[in-house]
Image (cartoon, rainbow, N blue to C red; front, side, top):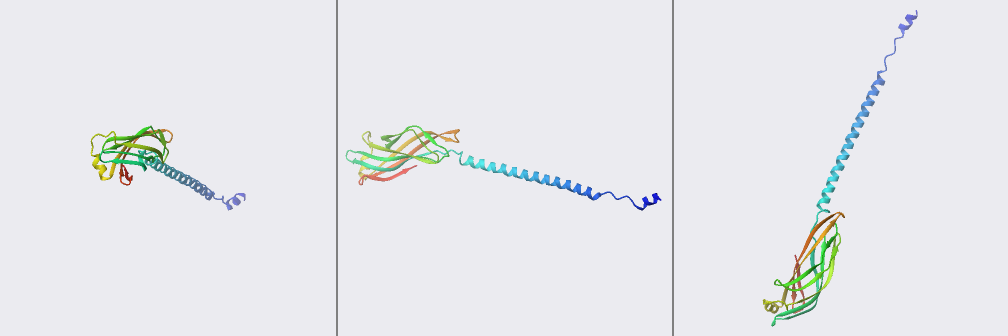
Length: 211
């Protein structure tokens, strides 16, 4: 009788639903980890590309050392005398020597001279003191200049003075170093090549051109 009763109630089936849910949860967790790893790899790749771009931009701009420019500025004529018959001239004027530094670091230069010439012959000089042009700035040095033709030999100065225009040239060379990031120093030599024209009748500056 007892055996019959046990046969009337078959054993409950195994709970496969819970096993399936556990397996799906494991797969979902693995998929989530995989997606996180992919996302992390993408972030790392983007960061590396960004760093490469930044380094390239810095190399092409900040770390690129340019040669500073040295020029003459405005000329204020104080005296200008000329005698075509002799021939001779003398002049005094004030001007500014500008050292333009377009680098991302200071440009320190040694003392030098600006030489003024008439057809290649020296007619005067002025000193440039040792100094510094700051980062992305222009150093301006005001000087007084006195020039005279007394040292000139034979030339066509007389005909030029008769024409009413006196043309001179100025030349200079600055030797210095550009300092970047407080660690790198690059030697740079700046040169001046200016042409100055004076109007003898009005005793004023006619033109000033610098290369």
